[in-house]
Structure formats: structure tokens, C-alpha cells
Image 1 (spheres, rainbow, N blue to C red):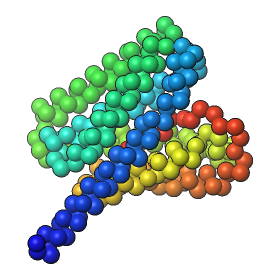
Image 2: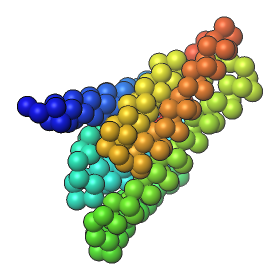
Image 3: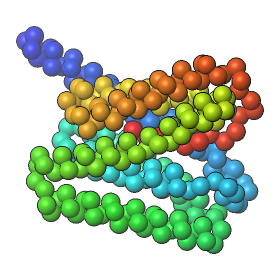
Image 4: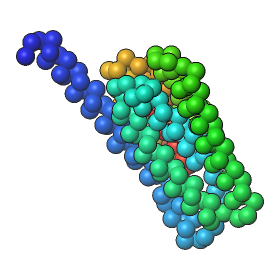
Length: 235
């Protein structure tokens, strides 16, 4: 094997490893709401929990899933896999939420789910009918970046809450660490693939992850009895 071939092989292995790592760390985030939904199932009530974060997460996963399909962006299948898994988790969570929600909240959630699929269908139809490669990738890529950056409202809210309360009770360490590692992994994956639609938003996510970890160690001594974790962002 030539030197060029060996370097390409190492490059491909590193790229694949970064994508796999991103998938694994994302899985930690996907399962993080399970304690909340166990509580909902036991009480048969959604109590004061909001279903909106899971609606946003579903739309984000669907858009990024579409961006990762070979028909839009060849060669980044690990973006497709992670968001496919994420979409399944969000659908399960939303289904449980709807089953246990009261009448008005149930109807609202059903309407929002239908709206998500209507928006996603419109994006798919538009990208297929109006755009050809590589402009199709650019169109969907900008939508995915906008969707990912909008999801950063969650960690920004948590960061603001920690600074105001000087407490990390709403910011579990393992979730902050998983967020940072996932963003870092997909940042590396995007760099290996030379894809700014992957490395730019995940670079921002990585910076926010570092801020969360710094704040955790700064205020961890003031931690009280842990409460239900807030939904974190998905990359």
C-alpha cells in the first residue's frame, strides 16, 4: 500500500471513529428523559411537564436525518443513523406524553406532531423537486444548521439558570459531559468530512458544553437534592 493509501485509510478510520463516538454519546442524551417518562407513566399524568422540547427535538432529528441521507449528502451516513435513532426516541416520548396528557394538552400535542410532519414533508418535497445536487445539500444543510442552533436555546437557558441560582441542581454532570463529548465528536466528524454544516453547529455546541462543565465545577459545592433533568440539545 502506498503512503497516500495508508494516510487515506487512517483518515477514514479516524472519521468513522469520530462518527461512532458521536452516535454513542448522543444515545446517552436520547435516554436521559427516561426517568421523567417513568414518572409520567406511574402517575398517569404529565403533571407540569411540557411536551414542547420533544416536539422541537423531533423536528430537529427529522431535518438532520434528511440531511444525512445519501440522496442529499453522500458519505455521512452516521449523521443519518444518529438522527434516525433520535427521531424514534422522540416519537416514543411524544406518544407516551399524548396518552397520559389531559384533553386540551393532548389535542395540542397531536396538532404539533402533525405540524412537524407537515413541515418535514414540505422540506423533503421542496428539496427533491426544486434542487439538484449539490445545491440540494446546501439547501437542507442551512435548514439543519438553523435547526441545530435553535436547539441551543436549551443549554443557554440552563447556563443562565445556573449563573442566576449559583446551583447546578438542574444541570446533571453526566448530561453536560455527554453533550460536550457528542458535540466534540461530531465537530471532528464534520472536519474529517470537510462539511461546515456539521462542524459549525457542533463547534458551537462544544463551546457551550465547555461552559456547562466549567460552571458545574464552579458551583458543584452548592448542589442540593437533584430534580428532574431538563432536556438537553441534540447534535
